[in-house]
Image (cartoon, rainbow over all chains, first blue to last red):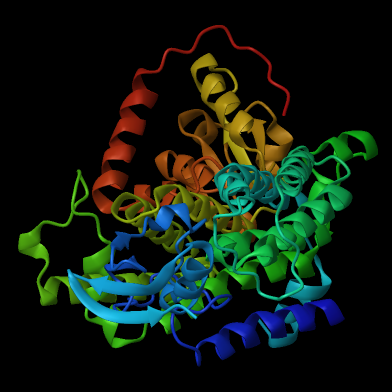
Length: 104
Length: 386
C-alpha cells in the first residue's frame, strides 16, 4: 500500500512540477506540446584563428538531438574544447548570424 | 457502485492474470526493440568526439565495453521478461539496466523510454509471470494476481494522457503551429499546403486534445470503454502515419495498446457461448475463436449440452439457429451481435471490433451472418471438448 501511494504521488507530483519549467521538460509527458521556435533551424559555425568559418556537422558531435536540451548553451563550450585553434562559435539561423560565443 | 466497493475492487481484490501476461509480452517486446533503437546512440557516446551531457558530474564515461555490457544485459533481460523466465529477477535487471542507460546522458532521454521503464517496474512488481510464461509452466499457471499493481498500470496510462493534454494547453499547440511543423509534408498522409490554414490546424489540434482527454478517463467506464479503444487506435495510427520518428511512435503505441488490454473485463470463463455443435462449419469458427481467446474469457458450449443450455435459459432451437452469448449481468446477444461481442474480448481484435457497432457495418454484418447461416453446409458432426 505504501508503494502504491508513493508511486502515485511521485507520478503526479513530478509532471505537475515540470509544468512550471520551460517546455518541453523531461519526465512530464510533454510530447509534442510546444515548439522550440528559438532552436528551429539553428546552425553552428566555428571561427578559426585565421578568420576562416567552418560549418559544424551536428551529427558528428551529438548522439541524439533532443528539444529538452538547449544546444546553444552546451554546444559552443564543447566545440571550443574539441576544436584546436577555435576562436569563437557562431550561431546562424536562415543565413543570418544570431549569436557568437567567444572561446575562452 | 459505492465508493468503498470501487476502491476495494481496485486495490484489495484480484485481477485476471492473462491480460497482465499479454501486457508483459508486449512491453518486453518493446524493450527489446528499444535496445536495438538506442544501442547505436550508446556506441556513439563512447566516441571521444561526441559531446557528453551527464545529469551529474560523477556519472561515468561510456566506454565501448560498457556500452556492449549494457546492451547485452538489456537484451538478455528483455528476452527473459518476454518469455516470463524468473520474471521478477529478469524484470528487475531490465529495469535497472534501462534506468542506468536513461540516466547516463541527457541525450538518451525520451518520454516513451521513461514510460517503458515505469511499465517494466510495475510489471515486475505485479507478478506478470503468473500466466503465459516459463515460470507458469514450471509452477503452474495462476488465474489471478493482486489488483493494486494492475491498477497502478492503468493509472499510469491516465497520467500520461492527462498530462499530455495539460502540457498542450498553450498557444503554440492550440493554434496548430506544432502540428504544422510536425505533420509530414510528403507521402500518402501529408497535410497539403492548401489545408495548412489556421482554422484547419486549430480544429486538428482541438480533436487531438479531446481524444487524449477522453482516453485519460473513458477507459475506466464500461459504457465508454469500447469507444475509447477505437479512438485510441485511431489516434496512435494517425500519429504514426503523420509524424515522426515513426519507430519511436510505434513503440509508444504498442505500450499504450498493451495497457488498454488491462481495462478489458476479462474474468476467466465469465461468458457462455452456445453454438450448433452438430455443424462442422460452425465448429471451424468456434475453433478459431477458442484459439484467439487468449484471455480464456469464453466458455464454448455445444447446443447438445442440454443441462447448461437450460441453466442459461437458452433453447436448443435458438442455439442451432445462431450463436448465443450470455455474459455478465445476464447480458445476451445472438448472431452477428454475439460474434462482435466475442471479438471485443479477444486481444487480437478488441481495438477495432467496436467499429462493428456502427450502423452501416452492424446492418451489413447482420445480413451477412443471416445469409451465411441460411446457406451453411453442415457435414458429419464432430464432438468438440468444451
